[in-house]
Image (tube, rainbow, N blue to C red):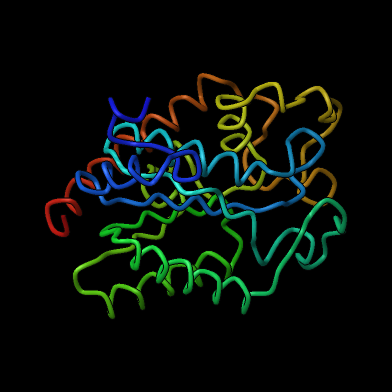
Length: 236
């Protein structure tokens, strides 16, 4: 399988296969997710599922190696002020996430990756900014390597997707990648959707669709692939 293509999953390959890809495309895709309550209609691993699949789709276009998803995040809905969703979220400290990200990037640099694409499926703050700060510091001390830390809304037009929690955009992406995990019928039909009652922040997810998720995913892949080509020209 991996002998004919220029991408692969790190944990599924033998050393010889990894080395073959590294020679041509020394790019690591690091999907960073979370275990977090996303309402009754979505799986608690939505952020991780989204990040892993988007990274995989980009890797198929640009080449590179997709690392196992990191299911660790801070600043979840569990601790959001005024919201009472304490179950079904596994939350870690900002300090721990910062430290893990630092060490992970250093490990990838030691493994001869030239470019790291860190995609955070979770946009809670300061979790996301901490990941970006770690990436900025990494770039300062590694002039011949580069880490690009981002969330999907960083490269998409606002009329297509904005930061949201289990709303139209995230739910559509989940439908696109694994629709069997979504239950739109569990959402109330007789009132407005809200963060306080439904753990939804953003546009109404009841109109979510596979086709909308596909549009988001393909636009993301196109935009990120263009940026990666520029990074390849500079660092590979």
